[in-house]
Image (cartoon, rainbow, N blue to C red; front, side):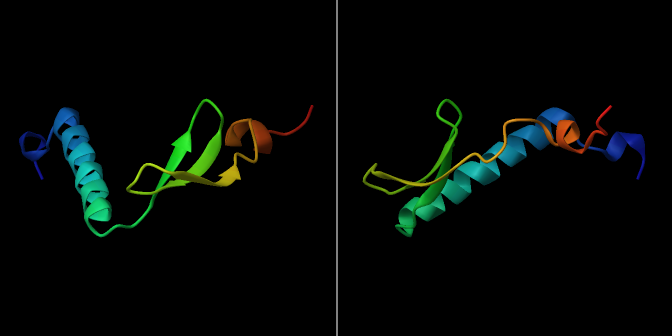
Length: 73
């Protein structure tokens, strides 16, 4: 492929956002709970169509992966 045939980063982001939006709408139509991560409380929920949330877990680690695997000095 030539450089002129590539799509821009903006188009890739728009397509990814559209794919996520379509998948969420599909799950709502099928009455399937979606998984939501709350950044403030660092908790993972199943969210139902009626708006109720069921907690399914908490974040296990707080540091980044690169900080966990770095050699200890």
